[in-house]
Amino acid sequence: MPCRSVRGRLRSVWSVWITSSAAAAGLALAGCGHPSSALPDDAAPDIAAPDTTPIDAAPDASPFDAPPGMADLQFIFGEMTNSVVVTADDFRADDCEVQEGCVGAAGRRTLVRFDTVSANRGTADVFVGIPPPPGESNDVFEWSPCHMHHHVKNYATYELRNASGVVLTSRKQAFCLEDGEQIEPGIPATGYSCARQGITRGWADVYSRYLPCQWIDVTGLPSGAYTLHIVVNPLRIVPESNYDNNEFTVGVQF
Image (cartoon, rainbow, N blue to C red; front, side):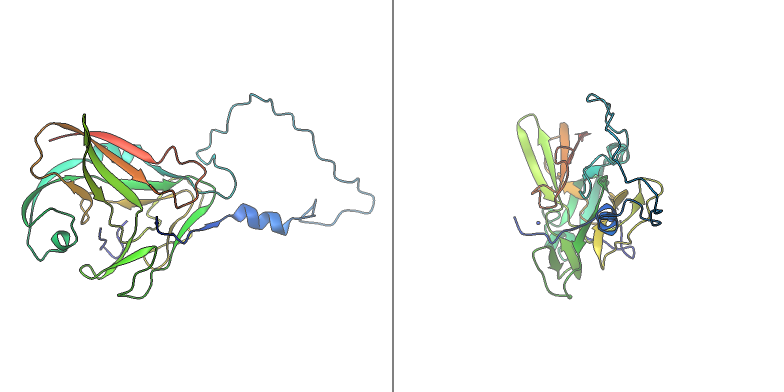
């Protein structure tokens, strides 16, 4: 999601904090069978009800099926599948896209552009962190002297494949991760932004295909059928309840 209409495009250690309202509630209620009022003098002691759930009961149909206190990053396929476009764009030698390697060289380039919509469908927020001062980098954020802002390291990988394997690899130059789109009604955003980056549970970070470096440069490749392959949290630095749902693929023809 663009920050103030501008966005560029961890095994380093990410500083990840997982926050869980359920954990906080558990501390508050520890040892209290009746949190809202005191027990009457003649009240019977609390007796746990027996668990009558069948062993083969169907799983919860809610998208929030992660264990308590765990994030779960997933792509929103419905918003990404039809977003792929192929464009021809001109770049000058002093453009940031050239200097930072988002395109192979200056001049006319053929680009496969696509939206990336990564949602947190877990039960806890992902807190990526607060960027260091301008001009400084750390294990999470890399300062871009061209764009004059920080990029998040290793949030996602982009690959173009054909029948023989990987043809090209690009990178996602994330200016910031923030709450850009609500995907689960009733869950308010924590308010993550470029200054305090993360994704609230039930929200998604959105990168438009028309933002800088949100593409793979395919200039010079033979025309034909390819597959775009995207992985979020590829190094598994962010603790998640499920890493098997972190990939997205779609066919590309140019």
